[in-house]
Length: 146
Image 1: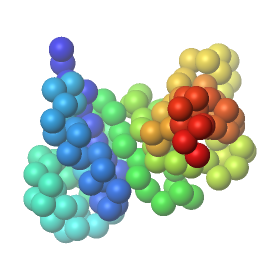
Image 2: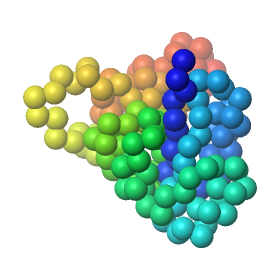
Image 3: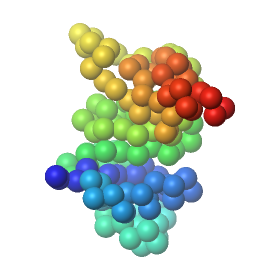
Image 4: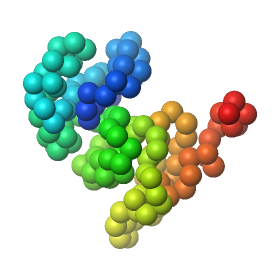
């Protein structure tokens, strides 16, 4: 099985929750990180032993060796970068909330079946469309735990 190649947008502290599991999973490989400040990105890549650093989020999305993009950015950037990553042909794992409003999650969808895209938001849910609240699709165990 060919491992999924991951890229991370940003050097957020929450990344430490994802990086160790990626390291031990034979089906995944952390390939790159992107940072708006190259020096910060390079230091982060050294610390976490990440092989490639991109100096912009756009550059990471354009990288043909990235299959999946993890988006741990501030909440107001989630919808924008999730949509950009999806349009770049990447799979996306976005921290919650996926959007702050229903309108943010409604990009132009001309001629597309809304069921064509499945998004994973944080670790809670699979949503057929961003406008639906993630709790509606949460696993029953998650609902009872809250």
